Amino acid sequence: MNRISTTLVALAAVLGFAGAALAATVNGDVQKVDAATGKVTLKHGPIPALDMGDMTMVYTAKDPAMLKGLKAGDKVRFDPAEVDSKYVVTKIERAK
Image (tube, rainbow, N blue to C red; front, side):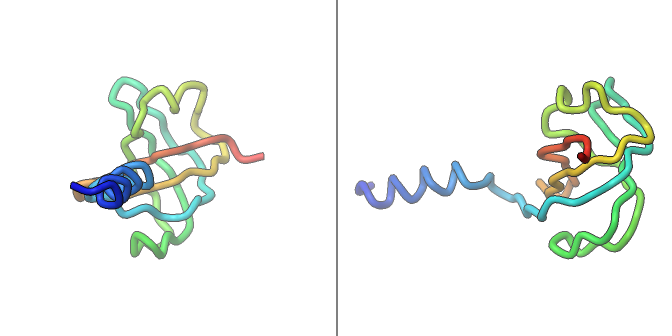
């Protein structure tokens, strides 16, 4: 593989991961946190990039540690993604 191809492959790996459809940052309300399974239930508005309307849905945290300190009732901003036909939160933080 030449240098340009190697660089492009590395860049693609840094910018995303295979099989992922990333959406923009979304505002939501935490309904439930299940730290034991690494899941969070979020009520949110539309997510056009994932073809979703307003809904309440259970997401798996990419890193369960990011759920530490969150509780039902918290207002958050989060980055959802579809990975291998599953919905995942790749980033989450309390809204300011």
